[in-house]
Figure (cartoon, rainbow, N blue to C red):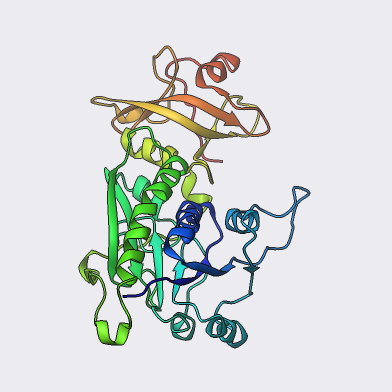
Amino acid sequence: MTDSLRYALMGTGPFAVPSFEAICQQLDSTGDEIARVFVRPLPPIKSRGGPPPQPVREWAESHNLPVDAPASINDPETVASLVAMDADLLVVCDYGQILKPDALQAARLGGINLHGSLLPAYRGAAPVQRALLSGDRETGVSVIHMTPRLDGGPIVSSRTTPIRDDETSGELETRLSAIGVDATLEAIGLLRTIESLETHGPLGQPQDPTKISKAPRLSKAEAQIDWSATARQIDCLVRGMQPWPVAFTHATVNENKPPLRVAIREVRTETFAADPANVGRVMEHDGLAIGCGDGQVIVERLQPAGKKEMSGLDFKRGHRLTAGQPLIAQP
Protein backbone atom coordinates (compact mmCIF):
# COMPACT_ATOMS: atom_id res chain seq x y z
CA MET A 1 0.00 0.00 0.00
CA THR A 2 1.31 3.47 -0.90
CA ASP A 3 1.91 5.67 2.14
CA SER A 4 1.71 8.95 0.28
CA LEU A 5 1.05 10.33 -3.19
CA ARG A 6 2.71 13.02 -5.25
CA TYR A 7 0.19 14.88 -7.43
CA ALA A 8 0.17 17.01 -10.54
CA LEU A 9 -3.10 18.94 -10.55
CA MET A 10 -4.56 20.13 -13.86
CA GLY A 11 -7.47 22.56 -14.05
CA THR A 12 -8.46 26.06 -15.01
CA GLY A 13 -12.11 26.82 -14.20
CA PRO A 14 -14.02 27.01 -10.91
CA PHE A 15 -15.35 23.44 -11.01
CA ALA A 16 -11.94 22.09 -9.98
CA VAL A 17 -11.28 24.34 -7.00
CA PRO A 18 -13.27 22.54 -4.24
CA SER A 19 -11.66 19.17 -5.00
CA PHE A 20 -8.17 20.67 -5.31
CA GLU A 21 -8.68 22.46 -2.00
CA ALA A 22 -9.78 19.20 -0.35
CA ILE A 23 -6.60 17.50 -1.59
CA CYS A 24 -4.55 20.40 -0.26
CA GLN A 25 -6.23 20.23 3.15
CA GLN A 26 -5.26 16.56 3.48
CA LEU A 27 -1.54 17.01 2.76
CA ASP A 28 -0.44 17.19 6.38
CA SER A 29 -2.42 14.14 7.46
CA THR A 30 -1.58 11.96 4.44
CA GLY A 31 1.97 13.03 3.74
CA ASP A 32 0.93 13.72 0.14
CA GLU A 33 2.53 16.43 -1.97
CA ILE A 34 1.37 18.67 -4.81
CA ALA A 35 4.30 18.83 -7.21
CA ARG A 36 2.79 21.36 -9.61
CA VAL A 37 -0.49 22.89 -10.78
CA PHE A 38 -1.12 23.10 -14.52
CA VAL A 39 -3.57 25.64 -15.98
CA ARG A 40 -4.47 26.77 -19.47
CA PRO A 41 -2.47 29.70 -20.88
CA LEU A 42 -4.13 33.08 -20.55
CA PRO A 43 -5.88 33.99 -23.83
CA PRO A 44 -5.16 37.29 -25.62
CA ILE A 45 -6.81 40.25 -23.92
CA LYS A 46 -9.64 41.51 -26.14
CA SER A 47 -11.26 44.08 -23.85
CA ARG A 48 -10.40 46.72 -21.30
CA GLY A 49 -11.60 44.39 -18.57
CA GLY A 50 -8.31 42.51 -18.63
CA PRO A 51 -7.78 38.75 -18.87
CA PRO A 52 -10.62 36.40 -17.91
CA PRO A 53 -10.46 34.93 -14.42
CA GLN A 54 -8.62 31.65 -13.88
CA PRO A 55 -9.89 30.34 -10.53
CA VAL A 56 -7.41 27.44 -10.34
CA ARG A 57 -4.43 29.73 -11.00
CA GLU A 58 -5.68 32.13 -8.31
CA TRP A 59 -6.22 29.24 -5.90
CA ALA A 60 -2.73 27.80 -6.52
CA GLU A 61 -1.05 31.16 -6.10
CA SER A 62 -2.92 31.73 -2.81
CA HIS A 63 -1.33 28.48 -1.55
CA ASN A 64 2.10 29.31 -2.96
CA LEU A 65 2.01 26.28 -5.23
CA PRO A 66 4.10 26.22 -8.42
CA VAL A 67 2.00 26.96 -11.51
CA ASP A 68 2.72 26.08 -15.13
CA ALA A 69 0.66 27.03 -18.19
CA PRO A 70 1.99 25.16 -21.23
CA ALA A 71 0.42 25.84 -24.61
CA SER A 72 -0.10 22.10 -24.90
CA ILE A 73 0.19 19.54 -22.13
CA ASN A 74 1.14 17.02 -24.84
CA ASP A 75 4.24 18.84 -26.15
CA PRO A 76 7.35 16.64 -25.77
CA GLU A 77 9.01 19.21 -23.51
CA THR A 78 5.97 19.38 -21.23
CA VAL A 79 5.67 15.60 -21.09
CA ALA A 80 9.36 15.39 -20.23
CA SER A 81 8.80 17.82 -17.35
CA LEU A 82 5.90 15.67 -16.15
CA VAL A 83 8.11 12.60 -16.16
CA ALA A 84 10.87 14.48 -14.36
CA MET A 85 8.60 15.57 -11.51
CA ASP A 86 7.92 11.89 -10.73
CA ALA A 87 4.21 12.32 -9.94
CA ASP A 88 2.20 9.33 -8.76
CA LEU A 89 -1.14 10.67 -9.98
CA LEU A 90 -2.56 13.34 -12.28
CA VAL A 91 -5.79 14.88 -10.96
CA VAL A 92 -7.62 16.64 -13.78
CA CYS A 93 -10.79 18.74 -13.70
CA ASP A 94 -12.12 21.59 -15.85
CA TYR A 95 -8.74 21.83 -17.56
CA GLY A 96 -9.64 22.23 -21.22
CA GLN A 97 -7.02 19.99 -22.83
CA ILE A 98 -7.19 16.30 -23.71
CA LEU A 99 -4.20 14.33 -22.45
CA LYS A 100 -2.61 11.94 -24.93
CA PRO A 101 -1.02 8.60 -23.90
CA ASP A 102 2.48 9.97 -23.30
CA ALA A 103 1.15 12.59 -20.88
CA LEU A 104 -1.10 10.11 -19.07
CA GLN A 105 1.74 7.64 -18.70
CA ALA A 106 4.02 10.26 -17.16
CA ALA A 107 2.49 9.49 -13.73
CA ARG A 108 2.80 6.08 -12.09
CA LEU A 109 -0.97 5.71 -11.61
CA GLY A 110 -2.05 7.69 -14.66
CA GLY A 111 -4.78 10.30 -14.21
CA ILE A 112 -8.27 10.73 -12.84
CA ASN A 113 -10.79 13.26 -14.09
CA LEU A 114 -13.79 14.74 -12.27
CA HIS A 115 -16.64 15.28 -14.76
CA GLY A 116 -19.95 17.06 -14.18
CA SER A 117 -22.34 14.32 -15.32
CA LEU A 118 -23.27 10.71 -14.76
CA LEU A 119 -21.11 9.24 -17.48
CA PRO A 120 -21.48 8.00 -20.16
CA ALA A 121 -24.18 10.69 -20.41
CA TYR A 122 -23.00 14.12 -21.58
CA ARG A 123 -19.42 13.61 -22.57
CA GLY A 124 -17.92 16.94 -23.53
CA ALA A 125 -17.49 20.56 -22.52
CA ALA A 126 -21.00 21.45 -21.30
CA PRO A 127 -22.39 18.50 -19.31
CA VAL A 128 -24.16 20.55 -16.65
CA GLN A 129 -25.89 22.80 -19.16
CA ARG A 130 -26.91 19.92 -21.44
CA ALA A 131 -28.53 18.04 -18.56
CA LEU A 132 -30.70 21.08 -17.81
CA LEU A 133 -31.50 21.76 -21.46
CA SER A 134 -32.60 18.15 -21.86
CA GLY A 135 -35.03 18.46 -18.97
CA ASP A 136 -33.30 15.80 -16.86
CA ARG A 137 -34.59 15.37 -13.33
CA GLU A 138 -31.27 14.20 -11.90
CA THR A 139 -27.58 14.41 -12.64
CA GLY A 140 -24.33 13.96 -10.77
CA VAL A 141 -20.58 13.70 -11.04
CA SER A 142 -18.25 10.94 -12.18
CA VAL A 143 -14.56 10.37 -11.54
CA ILE A 144 -12.95 8.33 -14.29
CA HIS A 145 -9.55 6.74 -14.68
CA MET A 146 -8.42 8.62 -17.75
CA THR A 147 -7.83 7.28 -21.24
CA PRO A 148 -6.96 9.28 -24.37
CA ARG A 149 -10.63 9.13 -25.39
CA LEU A 150 -12.60 12.20 -24.26
CA ASP A 151 -14.43 11.37 -21.00
CA GLY A 152 -14.29 7.71 -21.98
CA GLY A 153 -12.37 6.06 -19.14
CA PRO A 154 -13.77 3.56 -16.62
CA ILE A 155 -15.79 5.06 -13.76
CA VAL A 156 -14.02 4.87 -10.41
CA SER A 157 -16.57 6.75 -8.30
CA SER A 158 -19.75 8.81 -8.78
CA ARG A 159 -22.43 10.74 -6.91
CA THR A 160 -26.05 11.41 -7.94
CA THR A 161 -28.27 14.38 -7.09
CA PRO A 162 -31.72 15.64 -8.17
CA ILE A 163 -31.90 18.79 -10.27
CA ARG A 164 -33.96 21.43 -8.47
CA ASP A 165 -36.91 22.94 -10.31
CA ASP A 166 -35.58 26.50 -10.04
CA GLU A 167 -31.86 25.76 -10.52
CA THR A 168 -29.81 27.47 -13.20
CA SER A 169 -26.83 25.72 -14.74
CA GLY A 170 -24.52 28.12 -12.90
CA GLU A 171 -26.09 27.21 -9.57
CA LEU A 172 -26.09 23.50 -10.40
CA GLU A 173 -22.45 23.60 -11.47
CA THR A 174 -21.46 25.19 -8.17
CA ARG A 175 -23.36 22.51 -6.26
CA LEU A 176 -21.88 19.69 -8.33
CA SER A 177 -18.36 20.99 -7.76
CA ALA A 178 -18.95 20.59 -4.02
CA ILE A 179 -20.51 17.13 -4.47
CA GLY A 180 -17.47 16.16 -6.52
CA VAL A 181 -15.15 16.49 -3.54
CA ASP A 182 -16.23 13.20 -1.94
CA ALA A 183 -16.13 11.39 -5.29
CA THR A 184 -12.60 12.66 -5.95
CA LEU A 185 -11.30 11.72 -2.52
CA GLU A 186 -12.92 8.30 -2.81
CA ALA A 187 -11.15 7.68 -6.11
CA ILE A 188 -7.83 8.82 -4.66
CA GLY A 189 -8.36 6.50 -1.69
CA LEU A 190 -8.77 3.56 -4.04
CA LEU A 191 -5.67 4.44 -6.05
CA ARG A 192 -3.66 4.89 -2.86
CA THR A 193 -3.87 1.12 -2.34
CA ILE A 194 -2.39 0.30 -5.75
CA GLU A 195 1.33 -0.23 -6.22
CA SER A 196 1.18 -0.68 -10.00
CA LEU A 197 -1.53 -0.50 -12.64
CA GLU A 198 0.18 -3.30 -14.52
CA THR A 199 -0.23 -5.72 -11.62
CA HIS A 200 -3.61 -4.45 -10.45
CA GLY A 201 -5.54 -4.98 -13.67
CA PRO A 202 -8.62 -3.06 -14.89
CA LEU A 203 -9.67 -0.18 -12.66
CA GLY A 204 -13.27 1.04 -12.30
CA GLN A 205 -16.45 0.22 -14.18
CA PRO A 206 -16.33 0.42 -18.00
CA GLN A 207 -18.85 2.84 -19.50
CA ASP A 208 -21.84 1.42 -21.35
CA PRO A 209 -21.30 2.38 -25.02
CA THR A 210 -25.06 2.19 -25.71
CA LYS A 211 -25.74 5.07 -23.29
CA ILE A 212 -23.23 7.61 -24.58
CA SER A 213 -24.48 11.13 -25.23
CA LYS A 214 -22.56 14.26 -26.17
CA ALA A 215 -22.35 17.66 -24.49
CA PRO A 216 -20.78 20.11 -26.95
CA ARG A 217 -20.10 23.72 -25.99
CA LEU A 218 -23.08 26.05 -26.01
CA SER A 219 -23.54 28.54 -28.81
CA LYS A 220 -25.29 31.89 -28.70
CA ALA A 221 -27.67 30.78 -31.46
CA GLU A 222 -28.97 27.93 -29.29
CA ALA A 223 -30.14 30.44 -26.69
CA GLN A 224 -32.94 31.85 -28.86
CA ILE A 225 -36.33 30.84 -27.47
CA ASP A 226 -38.78 28.94 -29.67
CA TRP A 227 -42.15 29.98 -28.25
CA SER A 228 -43.92 27.07 -29.94
CA ALA A 229 -42.04 24.75 -27.55
CA THR A 230 -43.60 23.54 -24.32
CA ALA A 231 -43.52 25.68 -21.21
CA ARG A 232 -41.12 23.25 -19.53
CA GLN A 233 -38.78 23.26 -22.53
CA ILE A 234 -38.65 27.05 -22.43
CA ASP A 235 -38.10 27.06 -18.66
CA CYS A 236 -35.25 24.55 -19.04
CA LEU A 237 -33.70 26.67 -21.79
CA VAL A 238 -33.83 29.82 -19.66
CA ARG A 239 -32.24 28.08 -16.67
CA GLY A 240 -29.77 26.07 -18.75
CA MET A 241 -28.43 29.13 -20.57
CA GLN A 242 -27.44 30.96 -17.39
CA PRO A 243 -25.00 32.45 -16.68
CA TRP A 244 -24.00 32.25 -20.38
CA PRO A 245 -25.08 32.87 -23.10
CA VAL A 246 -28.53 33.72 -21.60
CA ALA A 247 -31.80 32.86 -23.36
CA PHE A 248 -33.21 35.60 -25.58
CA THR A 249 -36.06 36.54 -27.85
CA HIS A 250 -37.00 39.40 -30.17
CA ALA A 251 -39.98 41.53 -29.16
CA THR A 252 -42.02 43.85 -31.34
CA VAL A 253 -42.74 46.78 -29.04
CA ASN A 254 -42.92 49.53 -31.66
CA GLU A 255 -44.22 48.98 -35.20
CA ASN A 256 -41.93 51.73 -36.47
CA LYS A 257 -38.75 50.17 -35.10
CA PRO A 258 -36.95 46.85 -35.61
CA PRO A 259 -37.68 44.07 -33.09
CA LEU A 260 -35.94 44.55 -29.76
CA ARG A 261 -33.55 41.86 -28.54
CA VAL A 262 -34.50 40.88 -25.00
CA ALA A 263 -32.57 38.57 -22.67
CA ILE A 264 -34.91 36.39 -20.61
CA ARG A 265 -33.43 35.65 -17.18
CA GLU A 266 -36.22 34.14 -15.09
CA VAL A 267 -39.62 32.64 -15.88
CA ARG A 268 -42.37 30.55 -14.37
CA THR A 269 -44.83 28.46 -16.30
CA GLU A 270 -48.49 27.54 -16.53
CA THR A 271 -49.75 24.72 -18.72
CA PHE A 272 -53.23 24.21 -20.16
CA ALA A 273 -54.96 23.33 -23.42
CA ALA A 274 -53.36 26.08 -25.46
CA ASP A 275 -54.55 27.68 -28.68
CA PRO A 276 -51.69 27.57 -31.24
CA ALA A 277 -52.76 31.02 -32.38
CA ASN A 278 -51.59 32.43 -29.04
CA VAL A 279 -47.97 31.36 -29.46
CA GLY A 280 -45.79 34.46 -29.10
CA ARG A 281 -48.70 36.69 -28.08
CA VAL A 282 -49.24 38.60 -24.84
CA MET A 283 -51.67 36.66 -22.66
CA GLU A 284 -54.30 37.88 -20.22
CA HIS A 285 -52.35 37.95 -16.96
CA ASP A 286 -51.34 40.29 -14.14
CA GLY A 287 -47.68 39.88 -15.19
CA LEU A 288 -45.97 39.55 -18.57
CA ALA A 289 -47.26 36.22 -19.89
CA ILE A 290 -46.40 34.95 -23.37
CA GLY A 291 -48.25 32.15 -25.11
CA CYS A 292 -46.30 28.96 -25.83
CA GLY A 293 -46.96 25.47 -27.16
CA ASP A 294 -48.86 24.14 -24.16
CA GLY A 295 -49.81 27.16 -22.08
CA GLN A 296 -47.95 30.30 -21.15
CA VAL A 297 -44.63 31.48 -19.79
CA ILE A 298 -44.67 34.30 -17.24
CA VAL A 299 -41.50 36.35 -17.61
CA GLU A 300 -40.31 37.42 -14.16
CA ARG A 301 -37.00 39.08 -15.09
CA LEU A 302 -35.62 40.27 -18.42
CA GLN A 303 -33.09 42.68 -19.87
CA PRO A 304 -33.71 44.63 -23.08
CA ALA A 305 -30.63 45.23 -25.21
CA GLY A 306 -28.74 48.26 -23.92
CA LYS A 307 -30.91 48.55 -20.81
CA LYS A 308 -30.77 47.46 -17.20
CA GLU A 309 -32.43 44.28 -15.98
CA MET A 310 -36.07 44.77 -14.99
CA SER A 311 -39.19 42.84 -14.07
CA GLY A 312 -41.42 41.51 -16.79
CA LEU A 313 -44.27 43.55 -15.35
CA ASP A 314 -42.29 46.81 -15.63
CA PHE A 315 -41.44 45.95 -19.25
CA LYS A 316 -45.12 45.28 -19.96
CA ARG A 317 -46.21 48.56 -18.40
CA GLY A 318 -43.42 50.57 -19.99
CA HIS A 319 -44.38 49.41 -23.48
CA ARG A 320 -48.14 49.32 -22.78
CA LEU A 321 -48.47 45.73 -23.89
CA THR A 322 -52.00 44.36 -24.03
CA ALA A 323 -53.51 40.89 -24.14
CA GLY A 324 -53.68 39.40 -27.63
CA GLN A 325 -50.90 41.61 -28.98
CA PRO A 326 -48.33 39.78 -31.15
CA LEU A 327 -45.08 40.25 -29.28
CA ILE A 328 -42.51 37.76 -30.52
CA ALA A 329 -40.94 38.42 -33.90
CA GLN A 330 -38.11 37.03 -35.95
CA PRO A 331 -35.42 39.72 -36.50
